[in-house]
Length: 522
Image 1 (tube, rainbow, N blue to C red):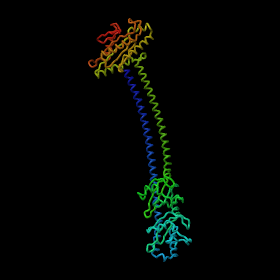
Image 2: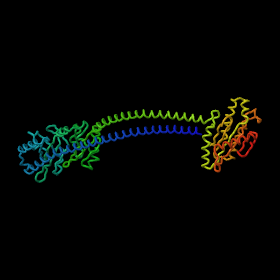
Image 3: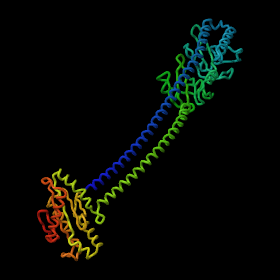
Image 4: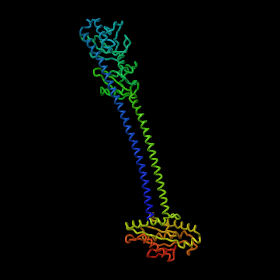
Protein backbone atom coordinates (compact mmCIF):
# COMPACT_ATOMS: atom_id res chain seq x y z
CA UNK A 1 0.00 0.00 0.00
CA UNK A 2 2.94 2.32 0.68
CA UNK A 3 4.18 1.76 -2.89
CA UNK A 4 0.73 2.46 -4.32
CA UNK A 5 0.38 5.58 -2.20
CA UNK A 6 3.80 6.76 -3.36
CA UNK A 7 2.75 6.21 -6.98
CA UNK A 8 -0.47 8.14 -6.38
CA UNK A 9 1.53 11.02 -4.88
CA UNK A 10 3.90 11.02 -7.86
CA UNK A 11 0.94 11.04 -10.24
CA UNK A 12 -0.62 13.91 -8.35
CA UNK A 13 2.63 15.88 -8.50
CA UNK A 14 2.88 15.26 -12.26
CA UNK A 15 -0.70 16.45 -12.80
CA UNK A 16 -0.07 19.49 -10.58
CA UNK A 17 3.12 20.39 -12.48
CA UNK A 18 1.35 20.10 -15.83
CA UNK A 19 -1.57 22.15 -14.49
CA UNK A 20 0.81 24.89 -13.41
CA UNK A 21 2.48 24.90 -16.82
CA UNK A 22 -0.92 25.13 -18.54
CA UNK A 23 -1.96 27.90 -16.15
CA UNK A 24 1.27 29.81 -16.85
CA UNK A 25 0.73 29.36 -20.60
CA UNK A 26 -2.77 30.81 -20.35
CA UNK A 27 -1.57 33.64 -18.11
CA UNK A 28 1.19 34.63 -20.55
CA UNK A 29 -1.21 34.38 -23.49
CA UNK A 30 -3.80 36.53 -21.68
CA UNK A 31 -1.11 39.05 -20.73
CA UNK A 32 0.10 39.31 -24.33
CA UNK A 33 -3.45 39.75 -25.61
CA UNK A 34 -4.21 42.43 -22.99
CA UNK A 35 -0.99 44.32 -23.75
CA UNK A 36 -1.59 44.22 -27.49
CA UNK A 37 -5.22 45.29 -27.06
CA UNK A 38 -4.06 48.11 -24.79
CA UNK A 39 -1.66 49.36 -27.47
CA UNK A 40 -4.40 49.14 -30.11
CA UNK A 41 -6.94 50.95 -27.92
CA UNK A 42 -4.53 53.73 -26.89
CA UNK A 43 -3.27 54.27 -30.42
CA UNK A 44 -6.82 54.12 -31.80
CA UNK A 45 -7.93 56.75 -29.27
CA UNK A 46 -4.96 58.96 -30.19
CA UNK A 47 -5.73 58.67 -33.92
CA UNK A 48 -9.39 59.52 -33.28
CA UNK A 49 -8.36 62.47 -31.11
CA UNK A 50 -6.06 63.77 -33.86
CA UNK A 51 -8.91 63.37 -36.33
CA UNK A 52 -11.20 65.48 -34.19
CA UNK A 53 -8.43 68.07 -33.65
CA UNK A 54 -7.88 68.29 -37.42
CA UNK A 55 -11.56 69.07 -37.98
CA UNK A 56 -11.66 71.41 -34.98
CA UNK A 57 -8.74 73.42 -36.38
CA UNK A 58 -10.36 73.42 -39.81
CA UNK A 59 -13.63 74.69 -38.30
CA UNK A 60 -11.77 77.56 -36.65
CA UNK A 61 -10.01 78.35 -39.91
CA UNK A 62 -13.13 78.42 -42.12
CA UNK A 63 -15.01 80.39 -39.46
CA UNK A 64 -12.30 83.06 -39.44
CA UNK A 65 -12.24 83.06 -43.25
CA UNK A 66 -16.00 83.54 -43.42
CA UNK A 67 -15.87 86.34 -40.85
CA UNK A 68 -13.05 88.11 -42.69
CA UNK A 69 -14.69 87.86 -46.14
CA UNK A 70 -18.06 88.92 -44.75
CA UNK A 71 -16.56 91.97 -43.08
CA UNK A 72 -14.66 92.83 -46.23
CA UNK A 73 -17.78 92.61 -48.41
CA UNK A 74 -19.87 94.56 -45.93
CA UNK A 75 -17.29 97.37 -45.67
CA UNK A 76 -16.90 97.61 -49.45
CA UNK A 77 -20.65 97.77 -50.10
CA UNK A 78 -21.28 100.11 -47.20
CA UNK A 79 -18.84 102.63 -48.65
CA UNK A 80 -20.68 102.58 -51.97
CA UNK A 81 -23.99 102.69 -50.12
CA UNK A 82 -22.97 105.79 -48.16
CA UNK A 83 -21.62 107.55 -51.25
CA UNK A 84 -24.71 106.83 -53.34
CA UNK A 85 -26.99 107.86 -50.49
CA UNK A 86 -25.23 111.21 -50.17
CA UNK A 87 -25.26 111.78 -53.92
CA UNK A 88 -28.95 110.85 -54.20
CA UNK A 89 -29.84 113.28 -51.42
CA UNK A 90 -27.86 116.05 -53.10
CA UNK A 91 -29.34 115.40 -56.53
CA UNK A 92 -32.90 115.25 -55.26
CA UNK A 93 -32.35 118.28 -53.03
CA UNK A 94 -30.81 120.51 -55.72
CA UNK A 95 -33.25 119.39 -58.35
CA UNK A 96 -32.37 117.65 -61.59
CA UNK A 97 -33.05 120.77 -63.68
CA UNK A 98 -30.25 122.61 -61.80
CA UNK A 99 -27.71 119.75 -62.11
CA UNK A 100 -24.16 121.04 -62.53
CA UNK A 101 -22.81 118.20 -64.62
CA UNK A 102 -19.14 119.18 -64.77
CA UNK A 103 -19.01 119.68 -61.01
CA UNK A 104 -20.90 116.41 -60.39
CA UNK A 105 -18.55 114.58 -62.78
CA UNK A 106 -15.57 115.81 -60.80
CA UNK A 107 -17.19 114.69 -57.55
CA UNK A 108 -17.88 111.22 -58.94
CA UNK A 109 -14.32 110.89 -60.24
CA UNK A 110 -12.98 111.98 -56.84
CA UNK A 111 -15.09 109.33 -55.02
CA UNK A 112 -13.99 106.64 -57.41
CA UNK A 113 -10.37 107.52 -56.80
CA UNK A 114 -10.91 107.18 -53.03
CA UNK A 115 -12.52 103.72 -53.23
CA UNK A 116 -10.39 101.09 -55.03
CA UNK A 117 -13.30 98.67 -55.23
CA UNK A 118 -15.28 101.02 -57.44
CA UNK A 119 -15.56 100.36 -61.12
CA UNK A 120 -17.65 103.46 -61.69
CA UNK A 121 -20.41 105.84 -60.55
CA UNK A 122 -23.31 106.68 -62.87
CA UNK A 123 -26.43 108.82 -62.94
CA UNK A 124 -29.17 107.77 -65.39
CA UNK A 125 -32.22 109.76 -66.36
CA UNK A 126 -35.81 108.46 -66.28
CA UNK A 127 -35.40 107.22 -69.86
CA UNK A 128 -32.17 105.34 -69.08
CA UNK A 129 -29.82 107.80 -70.80
CA UNK A 130 -26.50 108.53 -69.11
CA UNK A 131 -26.58 111.93 -67.42
CA UNK A 132 -23.31 112.00 -65.48
CA UNK A 133 -20.48 109.51 -64.86
CA UNK A 134 -16.99 109.47 -63.41
CA UNK A 135 -15.66 108.58 -66.84
CA UNK A 136 -14.03 111.23 -68.97
CA UNK A 137 -16.63 110.94 -71.68
CA UNK A 138 -20.09 109.49 -72.10
CA UNK A 139 -20.39 106.97 -74.93
CA UNK A 140 -22.74 108.10 -77.67
CA UNK A 141 -26.30 106.80 -77.42
CA UNK A 142 -25.47 105.15 -74.08
CA UNK A 143 -28.66 103.89 -72.43
CA UNK A 144 -29.21 101.40 -69.56
CA UNK A 145 -33.00 101.27 -69.49
CA UNK A 146 -32.86 97.52 -70.22
CA UNK A 147 -30.76 96.63 -67.17
CA UNK A 148 -32.52 94.66 -64.41
CA UNK A 149 -31.69 97.21 -61.74
CA UNK A 150 -33.12 100.04 -63.86
CA UNK A 151 -36.33 98.12 -64.56
CA UNK A 152 -36.66 97.31 -60.84
CA UNK A 153 -36.30 100.89 -59.63
CA UNK A 154 -38.62 102.17 -62.31
CA UNK A 155 -41.36 99.85 -61.01
CA UNK A 156 -40.59 99.97 -57.27
CA UNK A 157 -40.84 103.05 -55.12
CA UNK A 158 -38.56 101.93 -52.25
CA UNK A 159 -35.48 104.00 -51.54
CA UNK A 160 -33.23 101.21 -50.24
CA UNK A 161 -30.00 100.38 -51.96
CA UNK A 162 -30.27 97.36 -54.24
CA UNK A 163 -27.48 94.89 -54.95
CA UNK A 164 -27.95 93.32 -58.35
CA UNK A 165 -26.53 90.24 -60.02
CA UNK A 166 -23.19 90.43 -61.81
CA UNK A 167 -23.31 92.04 -65.25
CA UNK A 168 -20.66 92.85 -67.83
CA UNK A 169 -19.89 96.55 -68.23
CA UNK A 170 -20.87 97.93 -71.61
CA UNK A 171 -18.14 100.53 -71.47
CA UNK A 172 -15.15 98.44 -70.32
CA UNK A 173 -16.28 94.81 -70.65
CA UNK A 174 -15.45 94.09 -66.97
CA UNK A 175 -17.64 91.98 -64.73
CA UNK A 176 -19.23 94.25 -62.15
CA UNK A 177 -21.67 94.11 -59.25
CA UNK A 178 -24.29 96.90 -59.58
CA UNK A 179 -25.32 98.78 -56.41
CA UNK A 180 -28.19 101.11 -57.27
CA UNK A 181 -30.71 103.58 -55.84
CA UNK A 182 -33.95 105.06 -57.14
CA UNK A 183 -33.99 108.80 -57.84
CA UNK A 184 -37.25 110.79 -57.60
CA UNK A 185 -38.53 114.20 -58.46
CA UNK A 186 -39.97 116.30 -55.74
CA UNK A 187 -43.48 114.98 -56.46
CA UNK A 188 -42.33 111.35 -56.15
CA UNK A 189 -42.14 110.55 -59.81
CA UNK A 190 -39.32 108.29 -61.05
CA UNK A 191 -36.38 110.48 -61.97
CA UNK A 192 -33.78 107.84 -62.81
CA UNK A 193 -31.16 105.65 -61.14
CA UNK A 194 -27.93 106.35 -59.26
CA UNK A 195 -25.52 103.45 -59.78
CA UNK A 196 -22.25 102.47 -58.20
CA UNK A 197 -20.46 99.39 -59.54
CA UNK A 198 -17.88 97.24 -57.78
CA UNK A 199 -15.32 95.29 -59.77
CA UNK A 200 -15.64 91.53 -59.41
CA UNK A 201 -11.90 91.35 -59.98
CA UNK A 202 -11.36 93.39 -56.79
CA UNK A 203 -12.99 90.59 -54.75
CA UNK A 204 -11.16 87.90 -56.74
CA UNK A 205 -7.77 89.46 -55.96
CA UNK A 206 -8.68 89.84 -52.30
CA UNK A 207 -9.83 86.21 -52.04
CA UNK A 208 -6.68 85.08 -53.81
CA UNK A 209 -4.54 86.38 -50.94
CA UNK A 210 -5.95 83.77 -48.53
CA UNK A 211 -3.82 80.63 -48.16
CA UNK A 212 -6.28 77.79 -48.58
CA UNK A 213 -5.94 74.47 -50.35
CA UNK A 214 -6.33 74.19 -54.11
CA UNK A 215 -9.80 72.69 -53.76
CA UNK A 216 -10.94 75.18 -51.15
CA UNK A 217 -13.60 77.78 -51.98
CA UNK A 218 -14.65 81.30 -51.06
CA UNK A 219 -18.07 82.48 -52.25
CA UNK A 220 -19.97 85.75 -52.13
CA UNK A 221 -23.61 85.23 -53.10
CA UNK A 222 -26.92 87.02 -52.91
CA UNK A 223 -29.42 85.87 -50.33
CA UNK A 224 -31.36 84.03 -53.02
CA UNK A 225 -28.25 81.96 -53.81
CA UNK A 226 -27.02 83.77 -56.94
CA UNK A 227 -23.22 83.67 -57.07
CA UNK A 228 -21.50 87.06 -57.33
CA UNK A 229 -17.88 86.09 -56.74
CA UNK A 230 -16.18 82.73 -56.25
CA UNK A 231 -12.70 81.43 -55.65
CA UNK A 232 -11.49 79.59 -57.64
CA UNK A 233 -12.81 82.06 -60.15
CA UNK A 234 -14.42 80.68 -63.30
CA UNK A 235 -16.44 83.27 -65.17
CA UNK A 236 -19.15 80.81 -66.21
CA UNK A 237 -19.84 80.06 -62.54
CA UNK A 238 -20.87 83.68 -61.91
CA UNK A 239 -24.62 83.98 -61.88
CA UNK A 240 -25.24 80.31 -61.08
CA UNK A 241 -27.46 79.64 -58.11
CA UNK A 242 -26.75 77.91 -54.82
CA UNK A 243 -30.40 77.84 -53.82
CA UNK A 244 -30.47 74.04 -53.88
CA UNK A 245 -27.27 73.61 -51.90
CA UNK A 246 -27.34 72.03 -48.47
CA UNK A 247 -26.36 75.26 -46.72
CA UNK A 248 -29.04 77.42 -48.38
CA UNK A 249 -31.76 74.77 -47.94
CA UNK A 250 -30.99 73.30 -44.52
CA UNK A 251 -28.88 75.78 -42.58
CA UNK A 252 -29.38 79.41 -43.57
CA UNK A 253 -33.15 79.36 -42.95
CA UNK A 254 -32.45 78.52 -39.29
CA UNK A 255 -29.16 80.25 -38.50
CA UNK A 256 -27.44 83.26 -40.04
CA UNK A 257 -24.01 81.72 -39.46
CA UNK A 258 -22.56 78.31 -38.75
CA UNK A 259 -20.36 75.43 -39.88
CA UNK A 260 -21.47 72.43 -41.92
CA UNK A 261 -20.06 69.63 -44.05
CA UNK A 262 -21.56 69.58 -47.52
CA UNK A 263 -20.90 68.58 -51.11
CA UNK A 264 -20.62 71.60 -53.39
CA UNK A 265 -23.34 71.80 -56.03
CA UNK A 266 -20.93 73.65 -58.34
CA UNK A 267 -18.07 71.15 -58.56
CA UNK A 268 -19.17 68.19 -56.39
CA UNK A 269 -16.29 68.57 -53.92
CA UNK A 270 -16.95 67.55 -50.29
CA UNK A 271 -16.01 70.49 -48.09
CA UNK A 272 -16.23 71.83 -44.59
CA UNK A 273 -18.01 75.16 -44.92
CA UNK A 274 -18.46 78.14 -42.66
CA UNK A 275 -21.25 80.42 -43.81
CA UNK A 276 -22.25 83.89 -42.67
CA UNK A 277 -25.10 86.16 -43.73
CA UNK A 278 -24.20 89.86 -43.82
CA UNK A 279 -26.04 91.85 -41.18
CA UNK A 280 -26.74 94.95 -43.29
CA UNK A 281 -27.14 93.58 -46.79
CA UNK A 282 -28.85 90.55 -48.38
CA UNK A 283 -25.61 88.74 -49.05
CA UNK A 284 -24.04 85.53 -47.83
CA UNK A 285 -20.41 84.46 -47.74
CA UNK A 286 -19.15 80.88 -47.64
CA UNK A 287 -15.62 79.74 -46.82
CA UNK A 288 -14.85 76.09 -47.47
CA UNK A 289 -11.89 73.73 -47.10
CA UNK A 290 -11.97 70.48 -49.01
CA UNK A 291 -12.38 67.45 -46.81
CA UNK A 292 -9.37 65.88 -48.48
CA UNK A 293 -7.11 68.78 -47.42
CA UNK A 294 -8.25 68.27 -43.81
CA UNK A 295 -7.99 64.50 -43.81
CA UNK A 296 -4.80 64.06 -45.87
CA UNK A 297 -2.28 65.22 -43.19
CA UNK A 298 -4.16 63.28 -40.53
CA UNK A 299 -4.24 60.21 -42.77
CA UNK A 300 -0.51 60.49 -43.39
CA UNK A 301 0.22 60.60 -39.66
CA UNK A 302 -2.31 57.83 -39.00
CA UNK A 303 -0.65 55.56 -41.57
CA UNK A 304 2.74 56.12 -39.95
CA UNK A 305 1.27 55.48 -36.51
CA UNK A 306 -0.50 52.32 -37.66
CA UNK A 307 2.68 51.09 -39.34
CA UNK A 308 4.65 51.69 -36.14
CA UNK A 309 1.92 50.00 -34.13
CA UNK A 310 1.93 47.00 -36.46
CA UNK A 311 5.70 46.69 -36.11
CA UNK A 312 5.34 46.86 -32.35
CA UNK A 313 2.56 44.28 -32.35
CA UNK A 314 4.57 41.99 -34.63
CA UNK A 315 7.53 42.30 -32.28
CA UNK A 316 5.37 41.57 -29.27
CA UNK A 317 3.70 38.68 -31.06
CA UNK A 318 7.10 37.26 -32.04
CA UNK A 319 8.39 37.56 -28.48
CA UNK A 320 5.17 36.14 -27.10
CA UNK A 321 5.30 33.35 -29.66
CA UNK A 322 8.78 32.35 -28.48
CA UNK A 323 7.68 32.37 -24.85
CA UNK A 324 4.47 30.50 -25.59
CA UNK A 325 6.27 27.97 -27.76
CA UNK A 326 8.67 27.23 -24.93
CA UNK A 327 5.78 26.90 -22.51
CA UNK A 328 3.93 24.68 -24.99
CA UNK A 329 6.98 22.47 -25.35
CA UNK A 330 7.23 22.29 -21.59
CA UNK A 331 3.57 21.30 -21.39
CA UNK A 332 4.05 18.65 -24.07
CA UNK A 333 7.07 17.25 -22.22
CA UNK A 334 5.28 17.25 -18.88
CA UNK A 335 2.21 15.71 -20.46
CA UNK A 336 4.37 13.01 -22.00
CA UNK A 337 6.04 12.44 -18.65
CA UNK A 338 2.64 12.30 -17.00
CA UNK A 339 1.39 9.83 -19.59
CA UNK A 340 4.54 7.77 -19.17
CA UNK A 341 4.03 7.88 -15.42
CA UNK A 342 0.43 6.83 -15.84
CA UNK A 343 1.50 4.03 -18.16
CA UNK A 344 4.12 2.85 -15.69
CA UNK A 345 1.64 3.17 -12.87
CA UNK A 346 -0.92 1.21 -14.85
CA UNK A 347 1.66 -1.43 -15.66
CA UNK A 348 2.64 -1.59 -12.02
CA UNK A 349 -1.00 -2.14 -10.99
CA UNK A 350 -2.07 -4.38 -13.88
CA UNK A 351 -1.46 -8.05 -14.47
CA UNK A 352 0.29 -8.29 -17.82
CA UNK A 353 -1.21 -11.67 -18.74
CA UNK A 354 -4.91 -11.15 -18.02
CA UNK A 355 -5.26 -7.36 -18.08
CA UNK A 356 -6.86 -7.47 -14.62
CA UNK A 357 -5.54 -5.62 -11.63
CA UNK A 358 -2.72 -7.27 -9.73
CA UNK A 359 -2.11 -7.84 -6.05
CA UNK A 360 -0.59 -4.38 -5.66
CA UNK A 361 -3.78 -2.87 -7.08
CA UNK A 362 -5.85 -4.77 -4.54
CA UNK A 363 -3.60 -3.67 -1.69
CA UNK A 364 -3.93 -0.04 -2.81
CA UNK A 365 -7.73 -0.17 -3.00
CA UNK A 366 -8.86 -2.48 -0.21
CA UNK A 367 -7.95 -0.41 2.85
CA UNK A 368 -9.40 2.90 1.48
CA UNK A 369 -12.55 1.04 0.40
CA UNK A 370 -12.99 -0.37 3.93
CA UNK A 371 -12.61 3.13 5.39
CA UNK A 372 -15.19 4.52 2.98
CA UNK A 373 -17.59 1.67 3.75
CA UNK A 374 -17.12 2.31 7.47
CA UNK A 375 -17.98 6.03 7.01
CA UNK A 376 -21.07 5.23 4.98
CA UNK A 377 -22.14 2.16 7.00
CA UNK A 378 -22.04 -0.23 4.01
CA UNK A 379 -20.82 -3.82 3.78
CA UNK A 380 -17.96 -5.03 1.57
CA UNK A 381 -17.69 -8.43 -0.12
CA UNK A 382 -14.33 -10.06 -0.85
CA UNK A 383 -14.21 -13.24 -2.94
CA UNK A 384 -11.11 -15.43 -3.35
CA UNK A 385 -11.23 -17.78 -6.38
CA UNK A 386 -8.87 -20.57 -7.35
CA UNK A 387 -9.00 -22.69 -10.51
CA UNK A 388 -9.33 -26.39 -9.61
CA UNK A 389 -6.51 -28.81 -10.54
CA UNK A 390 -4.72 -26.08 -12.50
CA UNK A 391 -1.25 -27.62 -11.95
CA UNK A 392 -2.54 -30.76 -13.63
CA UNK A 393 -3.85 -28.57 -16.50
CA UNK A 394 -0.42 -27.08 -17.05
CA UNK A 395 1.26 -30.48 -16.84
CA UNK A 396 -1.18 -31.95 -19.38
CA UNK A 397 -1.58 -29.10 -21.87
CA UNK A 398 1.52 -27.00 -21.31
CA UNK A 399 2.07 -23.53 -19.89
CA UNK A 400 1.03 -21.71 -23.07
CA UNK A 401 -2.39 -23.38 -22.92
CA UNK A 402 -2.44 -22.64 -19.21
CA UNK A 403 -1.91 -18.90 -19.90
CA UNK A 404 -4.72 -18.97 -22.47
CA UNK A 405 -6.98 -20.65 -19.92
CA UNK A 406 -6.20 -17.91 -17.37
CA UNK A 407 -6.93 -15.21 -19.99
CA UNK A 408 -10.25 -16.82 -20.89
CA UNK A 409 -11.25 -17.09 -17.24
CA UNK A 410 -10.35 -13.42 -16.70
CA UNK A 411 -12.67 -12.44 -19.57
CA UNK A 412 -15.52 -14.42 -18.01
CA UNK A 413 -14.73 -12.84 -14.65
CA UNK A 414 -15.07 -9.35 -16.10
CA UNK A 415 -18.37 -10.31 -17.76
CA UNK A 416 -19.76 -11.45 -14.40
CA UNK A 417 -19.00 -8.08 -12.79
CA UNK A 418 -21.58 -5.53 -13.90
CA UNK A 419 -20.75 -2.51 -11.73
CA UNK A 420 -17.84 -0.11 -12.42
CA UNK A 421 -16.96 -0.05 -8.74
CA UNK A 422 -16.36 -3.83 -8.62
CA UNK A 423 -12.71 -4.84 -8.92
CA UNK A 424 -11.29 -8.11 -10.28
CA UNK A 425 -7.59 -8.88 -9.77
CA UNK A 426 -5.26 -11.76 -10.43
CA UNK A 427 -3.93 -12.39 -6.97
CA UNK A 428 -1.24 -14.77 -8.11
CA UNK A 429 -0.86 -17.90 -10.22
CA UNK A 430 -4.35 -19.34 -10.72
CA UNK A 431 -5.81 -17.33 -7.83
CA UNK A 432 -8.19 -14.40 -8.45
CA UNK A 433 -9.90 -11.95 -6.09
CA UNK A 434 -13.13 -9.96 -6.39
CA UNK A 435 -13.71 -6.80 -4.34
CA UNK A 436 -17.34 -5.66 -4.41
CA UNK A 437 -18.24 -2.54 -2.38
CA UNK A 438 -21.74 -2.12 -0.95
CA UNK A 439 -22.45 -5.86 -1.40
CA UNK A 440 -23.85 -8.30 1.16
CA UNK A 441 -23.64 -12.12 1.25
CA UNK A 442 -26.56 -12.90 -1.07
CA UNK A 443 -25.31 -10.35 -3.55
CA UNK A 444 -21.82 -11.84 -3.59
CA UNK A 445 -23.28 -15.35 -3.99
CA UNK A 446 -25.26 -14.20 -7.05
CA UNK A 447 -22.07 -12.93 -8.67
CA UNK A 448 -20.22 -16.20 -7.96
CA UNK A 449 -23.14 -18.24 -9.21
CA UNK A 450 -23.27 -16.18 -12.41
CA UNK A 451 -19.55 -16.80 -12.92
CA UNK A 452 -20.08 -20.54 -12.37
CA UNK A 453 -22.81 -20.57 -15.01
CA UNK A 454 -20.63 -18.67 -17.49
CA UNK A 455 -17.69 -21.05 -17.00
CA UNK A 456 -19.90 -24.11 -17.33
CA UNK A 457 -21.47 -22.80 -20.54
CA UNK A 458 -18.08 -22.04 -22.00
CA UNK A 459 -16.67 -25.51 -21.48
CA UNK A 460 -12.90 -25.48 -21.22
CA UNK A 461 -11.69 -29.07 -21.51
CA UNK A 462 -9.58 -30.32 -18.59
CA UNK A 463 -8.56 -33.97 -18.86
CA UNK A 464 -6.80 -33.80 -15.54
CA UNK A 465 -9.98 -32.90 -13.59
CA UNK A 466 -12.56 -35.40 -12.39
CA UNK A 467 -15.18 -33.10 -13.98
CA UNK A 468 -13.43 -33.14 -17.35
CA UNK A 469 -13.64 -29.36 -17.57
CA UNK A 470 -12.12 -26.32 -15.89
CA UNK A 471 -13.88 -25.27 -12.67
CA UNK A 472 -13.11 -23.05 -9.72
CA UNK A 473 -13.56 -22.94 -5.98
CA UNK A 474 -14.41 -19.72 -4.16
CA UNK A 475 -14.43 -18.33 -0.68
CA UNK A 476 -16.66 -15.34 0.18
CA UNK A 477 -16.08 -13.05 3.14
CA UNK A 478 -18.43 -10.22 4.03
CA UNK A 479 -17.25 -7.29 6.10
CA UNK A 480 -20.18 -5.55 7.77
CA UNK A 481 -18.49 -2.32 8.67
CA UNK A 482 -21.61 -0.99 10.40
CA UNK A 483 -21.12 -3.58 13.16
CA UNK A 484 -17.57 -4.89 12.83
CA UNK A 485 -14.20 -3.22 12.95
CA UNK A 486 -12.78 -5.69 10.47
CA UNK A 487 -9.43 -4.92 8.85
CA UNK A 488 -8.16 -5.73 5.39
CA UNK A 489 -6.02 -8.54 6.76
CA UNK A 490 -8.91 -10.13 8.64
CA UNK A 491 -11.19 -9.91 5.61
CA UNK A 492 -8.55 -11.48 3.35
CA UNK A 493 -7.92 -14.25 5.88
CA UNK A 494 -11.66 -14.98 6.18
CA UNK A 495 -12.07 -15.23 2.40
CA UNK A 496 -8.97 -17.41 2.11
CA UNK A 497 -10.26 -19.72 4.83
CA UNK A 498 -13.62 -20.05 3.09
CA UNK A 499 -11.78 -20.86 -0.18
CA UNK A 500 -9.87 -23.74 1.38
CA UNK A 501 -13.03 -24.96 3.02
CA UNK A 502 -14.64 -25.10 -0.46
CA UNK A 503 -11.67 -27.07 -1.78
CA UNK A 504 -11.90 -29.55 1.09
CA UNK A 505 -15.60 -29.94 0.35
CA UNK A 506 -14.81 -31.23 -3.12
CA UNK A 507 -14.08 -28.14 -5.29
CA UNK A 508 -16.33 -26.63 -8.00
CA UNK A 509 -18.23 -24.79 -5.29
CA UNK A 510 -18.05 -21.76 -3.06
CA UNK A 511 -18.18 -21.28 0.68
CA UNK A 512 -19.30 -18.25 2.63
CA UNK A 513 -17.09 -17.50 5.61
CA UNK A 514 -18.57 -19.23 8.69
CA UNK A 515 -20.96 -21.10 6.30
CA UNK A 516 -20.70 -23.45 3.35
CA UNK A 517 -22.75 -23.28 0.17
CA UNK A 518 -22.32 -25.88 -2.54
CA UNK A 519 -22.33 -24.94 -6.19
CA UNK A 520 -25.27 -26.07 -8.18
CA UNK A 521 -24.67 -28.00 -11.36
CA UNK A 522 -26.60 -26.74 -14.34
